[in-house]
Structures are given as C-alpha cells and as structure tokens.
Image (tube, rainbow, N blue to C red; front, side, top):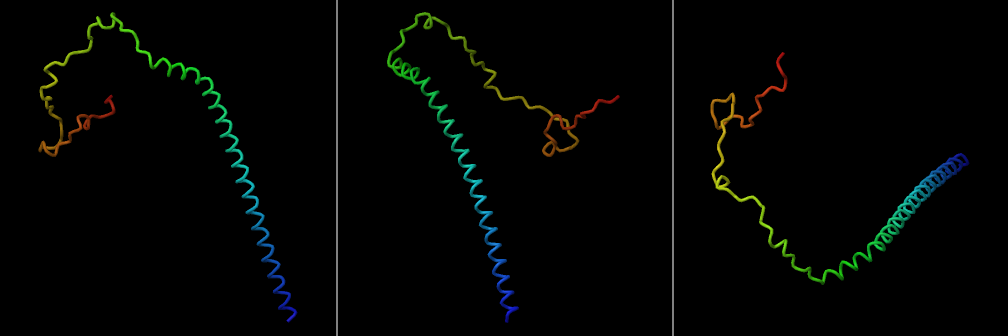
Length: 126
C-alpha cells in the first residue's frame, strides 16, 4: 500500500509538473501575442498620424477646390474655334477581315493547327 501511495504521489506530481509547463507555454505565447498586437497598434497609430498630417496639408486645397467648383469657367473663344483633329472612320473598317491560310501537317483544314508559328523552329541551322 505504501508503494502504491508513492506511485500515486509521483503520478500526481508528474501531472502537476506537466500542467505547470503547459501554463508557462500558454503564458509566454500570450505575452508574445500581446507584444505583437502592441506593435501593430503602434504602427497603426503612426499611420493615422501621417494621414492626419496629410489631410491637414490637403484640407485648405480641398476647401479651395470646393469653393471654386461652384464657379463656371468663362467661355474660351479660342477653344471653340479649334478644329476637330480626330481621325475619321474609313470604309475599310466595315469590310470583313481577310482569311489567312495556315501551314499545317494535317490534310484536313478543320483539324489543322491554327497557330501560325507552331511549326517554326526556334533554332537556326548552321
């Protein structure tokens, strides 16, 4: 019975030791996660500060643009007198595209390889 009690006590102590090790691992993992989260929050705060500074610099420009948006620009007579320099559409666009013959090893055109350069060698002969 004493040997049995000694074995039980040893088993309990081993179990307690294993649980303490598990608690230590979980605690250290939580500490690392907390440090990582604090780093990310710090980076986000820095980015927020940068964005606030940029907005502060752009604020007056945006305000001025909003104020100027209500005014209509004066008509420019020189712009109205300019001719349209865009290309005109010719009749060739409406014509059907030409069909091209493709070299192939197949006798039947329906099964022929339609990739035009599929039979070309990529090496030059000496």
